[in-house]
Length: 499
Ligand code: AMP
Ligand code: ZN
Image 1 (cartoon, rainbow, N blue to C red):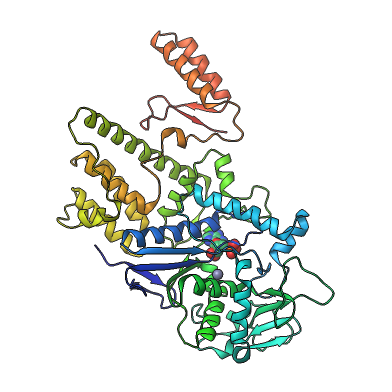
Image 2 (cartoon, rainbow, N blue to C red):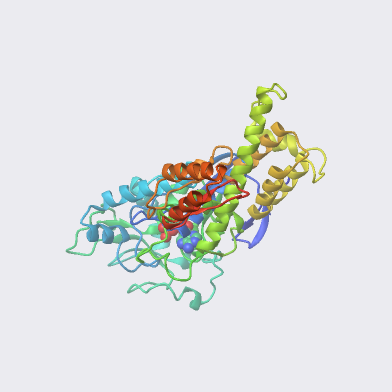
């Protein structure tokens, strides 16, 4: 198998993955702020982190993956200004901040499941406030100073602050809002005091007064508590490379009394972009996974759309692009369904033995050794392995999976086994999905699947009886309800609901 190479944002170079603890991979991904629904751009970050985790498992590492839940401390501005996101939403909905957090965390977990993201550990920031206060105490004397509004970290006290962001000029740091009395523009809050006369829903006592932790602190504290420090890989969206992660690094350096950053490799996914502003949580048709489902798309079509692009490239969202990804997913599912049916026939005719128990962990070790003839299963497995090990080149890995599905010369049981192994890395659930699962009913539809299938059976009978008037009438009625009848569709899909 090829060595796993990953792009490290710290060095801006590809590096061979060597674990801190032999045989293990420990990954921390910055998680959602649960003050609102996640948009599909946010979900791209978790599809990426999950794919990374799957690749590490496939490469044989025992994976520990943490995605934290930010339920306190995140302000409406990434610097230390603006309102607290949780408290603001709680006030606008007339609920408690705790209820808001619980509701949106549950929604986030549902989205993770629908995207076939393997269940990570997801601790909540509020469970770690005591540990955050301890961390603050341990760095306060040497690295922090107190102002009326809270305890601030002095970024000049650590080596090479901002190296990750390559922020060396004042201009680069100019985006950070000023707080009266800050020593450096980039200094950030470790603790924010509740202003005199105010009470917040989420506040704790600390040596610096009653208040709440600064947002950056939770990730340092939770990553060390759950993964140890240093750990292997820290991930997040590319926006975090600029402020949040440099601040985490500064906190880690201060706490560990070391120039090391806390994680060996820092990885960042690029953004999903949508030019008309629908990704904004305040827009009417806010682009969240549920909207895609309401429009009749299977959530895994979105996962596939993400995998078609390299995680370090921007990905432009369009409904046409999503539709194309959905058709591609359908094609794969239909082809795998046909393979499974053929395999079952052969088994029942005792032509092939029942599918040998699939040793998913070891599949490629077996397949990759040996020849690299591209026309063979082992050749396909080798291409898949090389591409996925090359900084997660999922676009080529996907093509290699499709070529495997289409390979005519291979035995069916072995082929299914290899498809299953590849799918375990890409997470498209190809062996379990059925045609029925992919038929998502658009919310605006006025006709049910059962009614469509019944009408199509009647139409088939009418055509068999050469009653073309009835057959045409049925088709026109279906069209009026948004159903497009697809005679002779190579995907064997028969109909499509367009509303
Ligand atoms: P937030 O809840 O804003 O902290 O974001 C959660 C995660 O989504 C972070 O890793 C962000 O960097 C990432 N993210 C935010 N917007 C996008 C986007 N449009 N595309 C990809 N990732 C994003
Ligand atoms: Zn974080």
